[in-house]
Amino acid sequence: HMPPLDQCYNLLDFEAVAQRVMKRTAWGYYSSAADDEITLRENHAAFHRIWFRPRILIDVEKIDMSTTMLGTPCSIPFYVTATALGKLGHPEGEVVLTRASHKHNVIQMIPTLASCSFDDIVDAAAPGQVQWLQLYVNKDREVTRRIVQHAERRGCKALFITVDAPQLGRREKDMRFKFTDQGSKVQEGQATDTSQGAARAISSFIDPSLSWADIPWFRSITKMPIVLKGVQRVEDVVRAVEAGVQGVVLSNHGGRQLDSSRSAVEVLAETMPVLRELGLESKIEVYVDGGVRRATDILKALCLGARGVGIGRPFLYAMSAYGQPGVERAMQLLKDEMEMGMRLLGARSIAELTPALVDARSLANH
Ligand code: FNR
Image (cartoon, rainbow, N blue to C red; front, side, top):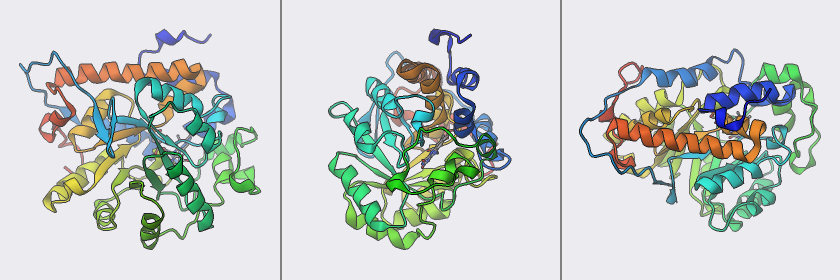
């Protein structure tokens, strides 16, 4: 009863199929979010409050959606964000995402808590393929130093430090289904208590004492650009610039951490005018993630000033249901939607995506 792949016409179709075919525990881990999942729903809903103001009679025969993110050229301004435990959804795990990303010249962020080993994921990449590292900071800083410096030696092009998870959120769906599967490799062989679900079980090493004072240390151990993932207010974006990091991801961790956090596009609308006013716009790259399901969502975020967007669950669902061909089709659908969206919007290049092309007055922070 599984529909053929060519009958998936958009990213939400993959989710519907995945819900039917995935193991309950895996579905529970991937789809769950914190508490009442208010933020999870809001992530998607917030995009519906932004409207387009297309330009007409522009020669849009040729559309160029290529861009650069943290200095790296890529075919389209989205990346595969870090999501833990890829083998819950597919026996080969994260390397499926690696191979699909290569086909589409898309950047992949490698999670600290991948099911595959870090080296297997790097080895699965083609020559020149760009990967980033997502870091959960270990209480033992020597472990963290080893992870970061190993990633840099292996060619990772940026370090994303997750800053929204001093403790993992309560994902009750995940807790109910309990985590019994063996998709995960627990970091550094730590004993785990799985009674609270998959997430808690694997995250006990994360250091809740991580603070701004640690940022200079990270700067001293790596030359990779540093990006703070999980920023939720303009004050912290400004502070990130002052701390000398190269980027921020406005993100609420897909609604999996603090419930009732705002969506990233709300925070983006709060952030960009302040950065412009302070003359800091060129000092930092601002990314967003959470709820991106259509190229029109990507376009809205870019018009509001994002450099690029991260996409998580849709690729997990495509991978779980259809393997690598599924992920490739999901990426192709986004490219097709993006080309059409830019054409109908009257924007021929990423540089032409400006605030003038959206009406964001329904966002609280406009
Ligand atoms: C995540 N996310 C995440 N983030 C992170 O920094 N480290 C991690 O290990 C994980 N793991 C993880 C697992 C799963 C199953 C999900 C769904 C998400 C958060 C992720 O990087 C990103 O912020 C959100 O997934 C973006 O929202 P969407 O695209 O899933 O709506």
